[in-house]
Length: 77
Image 1 (cartoon, rainbow, N blue to C red):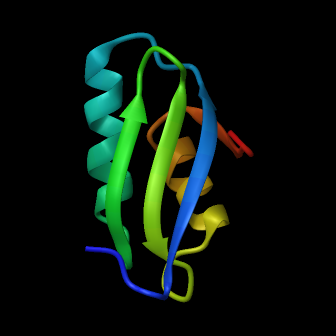
Image 2 (cartoon, rainbow, N blue to C red):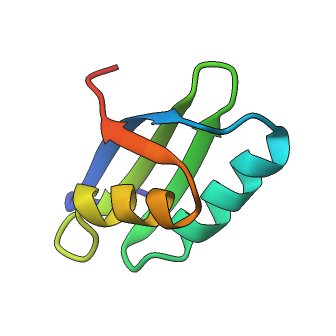
């Protein structure tokens, strides 16, 4: 469910090479406060996150992806 305070953020990711990497990122980002939905697109190396920006910022998401061992940066597409 998305609300008025939900932001849809797209990130470009680097460094993941297997489907289990996808699950690791989805699990860790999904545990952040305010994150409603996480979808990692393995083939295109994109991460889509629906989140409440007042609880979790884009920087928080990037930092969490980094903690999981991967690089991510905001992307327009």
